[in-house]
Amino acid sequence: MPPATPALITNDAVVLGLLAMTLGGVFWTASRANGFWKKFYTYIPSLLMCYLIPALLNTFGIIDGNASGLYAVARDYLLPSALVLLCVAIIMFLTGTLGVMLGALVSFEALRLIHPETVAGDTWRGMTTVAGSWIGGGANQAAMKEVFEVDATLFGQFVAVDVLVANVWTAVLLFLAGRAGAFDRWTGADLTAINALKDSIESYRAQHARIATLTDIMIILGVGLGVTGLSHFLAGPIISWITTLPAEWRLQDYSLTSNFFWIVVLATTFGLLLSFTRARSLEGAGASTIGSAMLYVLVATIGMHMDLKALFDKPFLFLLGLIWIAVHGGLMLLVAKLIRAPLFFMAVGSQANIGGAASAPVIASAFHPALAPVGVLLAVLGYALGTYGAYITGLILRSMAG
Image (cartoon, rainbow, N blue to C red; front, top):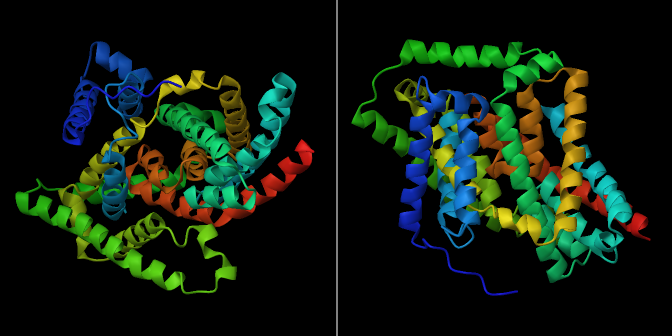
């Protein structure tokens, strides 16, 4: 394979400026009251464009998402801050988990018929790492790599499948979010609880809204970034204490030794606690709006990791991944229709599995900023179930592979 060509723009300060202009351009065009852009955004959600444009910039070599440190900054600092400021779908979440497990088996059998070479040998081992990632997260994925002794080359191939297919699915969910009304009419969903939450938030905003002063903005940033800093500070000692516990408990398999896991959990917890204090008055000055802005930056940095050309490198391996995610999505649609679940629960329950804590809040906030913590809470549940679900899937795949 020839060496990768350096991106046209490698300075992260310039990349950040480009992403900021991209987001600004999307919001400006989406705000047009009539004309071409009005019609365009009737069919294409603006949030999807915030994700897709950076993906195209990465695909065509303008920027290099993998070489940039912006995503780590957005994930580790802006996301927790957004969760603090923005501060249930168990059936749909568990359906998503079952969909990942069932999808592994169906896609394995489908490729055995379509292109047997793709699933020959130890391919099933690599699939266990994707199951770990899609049910839980990175720690669960790493655990499956060790449990099923996946070699480095195979692991790398399935990391590519994981990243690309998961990003494609995120784009699909963002697209559907712009059509929540039509979906909910199709399922006959009862939107009472969600609408009540949205109405209460809007009513609170109407009663307490004020033009934000510089003092308000600085206090909002102080609370958001300050609590994020506190979450980072506390995560280290918590992990250090957990590592002293008996190794046979295997707590690392459940992300309990993951720094990011504890940052997200702590930030969400502090955000919920602050909502019961006078800090909730910051919502009137636009706290959740600033939190949403942080999430949009995260969306752009996630998008710039997606290389669309990778679809053509190992097409049958990616076909396996696409069949896999299609089974997951199909099961989600079926159950949503049967239980008349709103699109919100289907989308967040799915993304909490496939994308985890970094992107589930993004999908949730596409429906309403106040709903972002739901995505985090479900993703945390995924971390707990990831090792169990992936291990069971691996055992079944091993028996199918013979």
